[in-house]
Amino acid sequence: MNKHVTWRPAATDAGQDVIRLADVRRRFGETAALDGVSLDVRRGEILGIIGRSGAGKSTLIRCLNGLERPDSGRIEIEGREITGLGEAELQPLRRRIGMIFQHFNLLSAKTVEENVALPLKIEGWSKEKRLARAAELLDLVGLSGKAKAYPSELSGGQKQRVGIARALAARPALLLSDEATSALDPETTRAILALLKDINRKLGLTILLITHEMEVVRTIADRVTVLDAGRVVEEGPVWQVFSQPQAETTKSLLSGIRPQLPAHIAERLSADVAGEAVLGIDIAGPAATGPLFQELSAAFPAGYRLIHGGVDHIQEQAVGRFFLAVLVDDAARFVSFAERLGAQVEVLGHVAGHA
Image (spheres, helix red, strand yellow):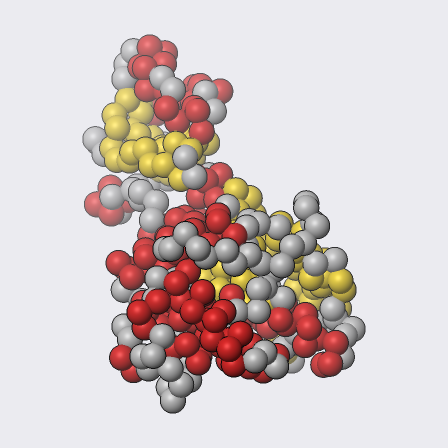
């Protein structure tokens, strides 16, 4: 990136929430797509919204840009309530919101620079000024040498970089990313996420990520909101939610990226209290790198066994997930002791012999 790039999003008041939703509801027939959603997106943060298909993510993003009208509730963008605005009043608002899409939505008959400059042409900018802005933005996203190329000549990652540049053309206060990396391979996804994080950090741009990919949220989001059947079921800092999820929906969504009890042991679990108790232990923050196992060993000389797990790092916080086997007679005391050390413990079941 060249040092001469000086583009900045238009300023908003320091500390102001860019988005504020209060009890937003939207139904389609008998289906509640949004069922009392309340959330805030703070200026300069990256918020990830995750959920299964049908959770309400797409309806939420369409309500934010005014393409859907909620049945009730309140939506504020930069402090302005938008649900009662007419189409003419929504147009300036939409210029404050940039959008990037899963399938890029580039115009195949226009060059890269023309695609990027298109929102500015619609706004009435002169050709000279809009092409100058397009050049600046292409430099920002690392495509300064592709201005005259057509979308068919670009890779998927390059197309998404063009989409990002186009979304930034009108200097938005908010960038909405709707499954923007779902069509990309893992290596390209990492590059696009690094670009978004860089833009967020250097330009102070607020980003809302709609995704079903947990790794996307884990990689760049500051906070996460979990939707299920149109409701917010969990929210908080990414490291906290990913390390100690409370809602069953969250646990299920995270099962692909968190350590799980090995299948051959899970198949042997029984509710019968005998042999060994198998425990799932989640621990995060300073406690995850503290002397957990040393203290457990000192308190339980009869011992326990580590079955599976390890320590990861999310948002510079240590996050541990372990599976242990302990004698049934020690299980209740073991759980209580581990919880006093800051762990979250679940008895998963019992096995008659060694797990």
